Image (cartoon, rainbow, N blue to C red; front, side, top):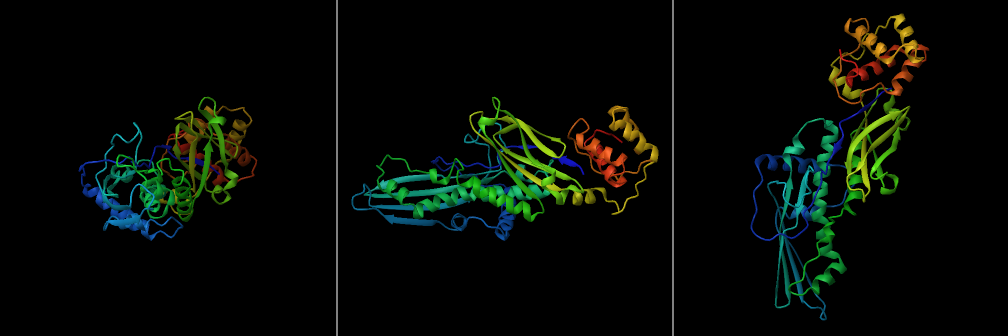
Length: 396
């Protein structure tokens, strides 16, 4: 078996501007943004997973949603009318975003409030923005994860709109508060969930369903402040044995972190560990781990027949046993393997190169020990050699 760690994604994919903004500063989206939004929305509407109904906010892209309700006779105001519209707008890293983060999208509540003769009118020209440059880039992202992440962005931003609309339509607390606003009072937009207390569990369940449909598994790990040392942490996040369906051909682990920096994976025996730091030492961090098998990936990359001839001379097994018991150094062992591959003595199918770790993992030596003892076959041992090539420990 072998374990592959993908490039770590440390970013904020999701954001929202929830402070009302006044003035006519609308900038139309680019054609790339329009085309990507249409594509993602079409895919989103076809998804067969459980998710919160966001039809109200989607309807505001087509026509204004008007919500009105009378106030009680004892309230300060008599009537509240909300008119909500949403437009796709050009993405920009504006002042609402924290410096240095990569944002996949924003949903902005842009409302003007007028009070006249006991009537409050809330006129909202909201904007959805998507960062098409980021969402369309390939980089190191697994295409399966990229598709899921992009759907999370759309769902997340639509929820910022839908949750606020839900409060306007049915929250007695919000309605009572608004009915008693003085002319200079501020409208409560907190229901759009800037802190993500409602959205986080919704999008987590949404993501888990999509990952499973794609053939993978998703783990969620919270890194609390208490379990860190001045923000630094190393924590076990899983075990290879938790995923027997993937072990034979290898496991790929990818991460999306919230409030996590300087992250890296390590493995010991069959356990997977995550190390890093909390960006804000006073708040917990959240790690989403996407687990996939690599059999399909290797087949498409290698473009080799399903059965590739593997021949390993007997004397290589003797060298391997010396390496395992410490008689032969790792440097000399790897030099020998490199020579065998370069000379064609050991046939290793060509695979794509990924940068990862800089030393031989413990599980590779364990595999080597089992192979030298005849407990695993040549093909399984070569899988470990393929891994060493893929992460650049052996260059051929």
